[in-house]
Length: 235
Image 1 (tube, one colour):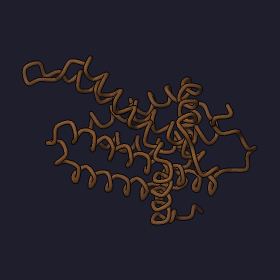
Image 2: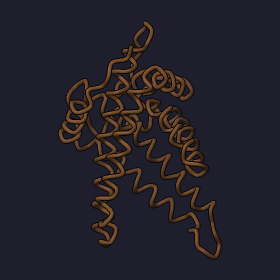
Image 3: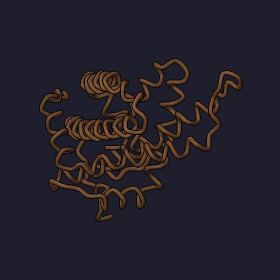
Image 4: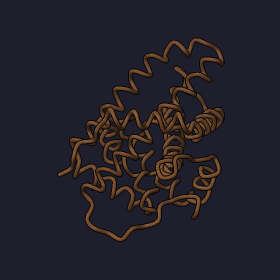
């Protein structure tokens, strides 16, 4: 039986990890900058044109870039967990050397998540839940994209109540943070920068929490297996 995750302790540990390694915020900051840059080349939706395709494409690009950044951050967080620190060199190495796995996985998750939310929201939430451990599974177990998805589904199914709790906590916190940061959109430039910083810090903390949840739930439910080398700077 899967034991419950000590959420207050996990959150405090995640915040401490990000405070000790602010470099964990960098992948998300880069993904935000890239999403803004790419969006400049995508036609904007207007009441006259009703460009839903442009809106959807903008959403998909932002989600995929964010998920890719989540994978890089997870690998950096794993290194910080093992050694106490991480670096941009690790992030760069993971982002470039594992692109053939990280990018397809980000595409698979991003498309399912975006399509689900654009349809009836609930399918998007289900996709977010079932695939929430895919990136940690990939970086910890050095898995292929489809194996990482299958591993995430396995862990979620075996620890459904606990995983729902983790996802619910993240969702409520995200909503609260979004409401608190809403006034920042009215501050030109500075508000955009502060929003990006808040989003990056929050994403880094969430990534560490999901990594810790995956490590606990997978160790509670996994059958005996030969150890595999994680994604890291040595590869």
